[in-house]
Picture 1 (cartoon, rainbow, N blue to C red):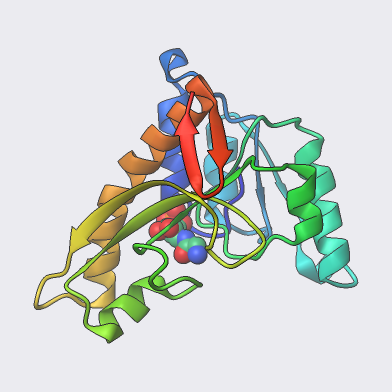
Picture 2: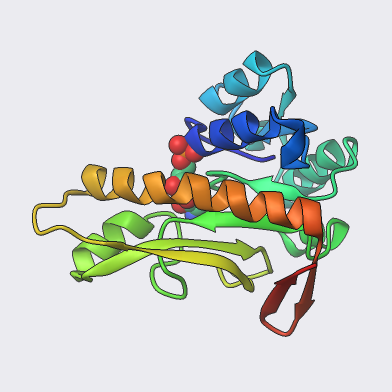
Length: 195
Ligand code: GAR
């Protein structure tokens, strides 16, 4: 798994994977931020944690290559981004074809990018939500695995909306990642099917 921040999404997946019936094991957690709380959560769960900081690499090409090597060392069946806030390069993705999944706090294709919750609020939408998608070379443009809607409230600020989105996001992502791991998946065009 890859995470940059506080790691509450990661925690939900670590908790789910603690049950053998979930059918997926977290083999390692990586981050671009050596001090990320997500790495502490991984270690607390007995999962190996590593960081590949951009500051330690000469450029983004080298960083993507170093991150891909670190991930590949754990031979994951699926690379799960959980609040991972960097764009993975085509060279990285080619190492794990159709095997990188992300969760995004908006109903894509609306509000891609790093400020989805604030952007949805600023636009004045009445409904936003969560999109689980496979990662392709664009920014939040990959084929959709699962989505759920979250209605806005009149008095929402960014923190309140983010909280309600994440309350929906964690179980949705746990369910989607579990199904991908247990059932496998196929991709035809933009259609992802389990099994
Ligand atoms: C999640 O809501 C995730 O969808 C979002 O970051 C949050 C991470 O929260 N990811 C993106 O915005 C990716 N563009 P967490 O650190 O508490 O798990």
